[in-house]
Length: 132
Image (cartoon, rainbow, N blue to C red):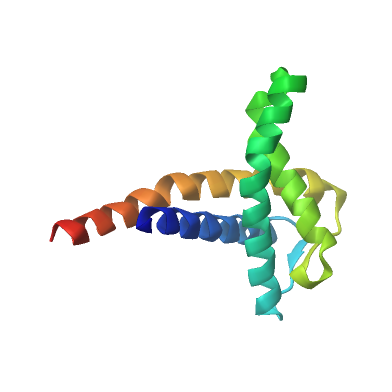
């Protein structure tokens, strides 16, 4: 159970890192920094939508377009970003057309790297604490 919560926290942190990276890299991708609650809302909504959409997109892609299976992560990231942008209180706006294409790629890459690199740090630490 603790491992589940650690993995969920890592996924939320990785979503935050991905959105922050897109904000720093892309002109036209903007996170409203004046409202920290809006950013937290955007991250949580993005993480929940992403975690729900990924299996659904996989199922639909496998059934209807198997050639797109490699792009499931980017597709679900794009849909999650669109939904978060549509929520006015979330504080995420995209104003440049190129940002609509590059944001899902950047967020997906950063999120994938973070979810790959962060678990060994936290889970190994937790295992070491239990053994002690």
